[in-house]
Length: 94
Image 1: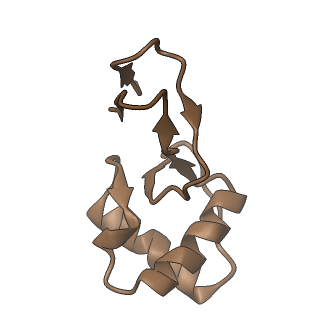
Image 2: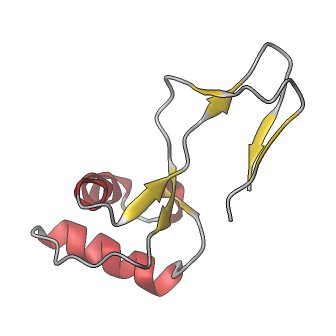
């Protein structure tokens, strides 16, 4: 279960900032085409089987960005978008 909490009115919206936090969708399977994407996805399975992770958790961020792109195309990952509300209000995603 994913929960959004806000200190404002509860009407959060996505920002223009790129998301860097993802979670693996354990119900989806696909054989990835590129070697870097397969390596990246195997690292996810090993290190973060069901938990959310940040791209900063990987040693090679460039390979991770390439792998994320292909994984998102085939819906193997679920992104956690960056959310905002009005000025001086906080939004958290659990």
